[in-house]
Image (cartoon, rainbow, N blue to C red; front, side, top):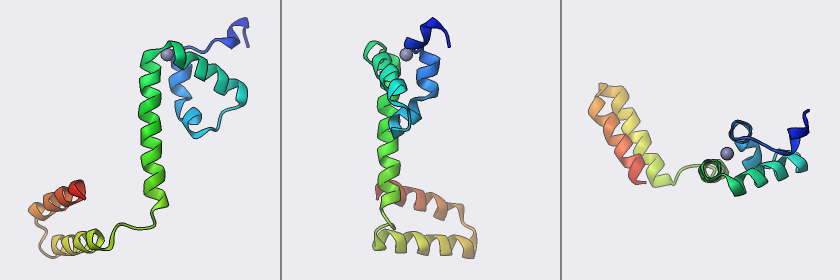
Length: 100
Ligand SMILES: [Zn+2]
């Protein structure tokens, strides 16, 4: 530890961003990273991105399964793909998923 331990640089901030977003850092480290974010726009942008990503992942995991209709459609498409190996069917599944 150097006397500079009270200052977190961008590489440290970015390296530990997911820990910060997940709330897994110590109180001291959280304070240091939070302080860095108030004075560093690029890291703050990365933080916002990671936070959104984390929220989306949490929501996806919390939901036990896809809506029945979407699930049935996808399963039916997958079955069709397995039957005739059509790449067109794969792209249709992708489009359906994106619209869902
Ligand atoms: Zn920074």
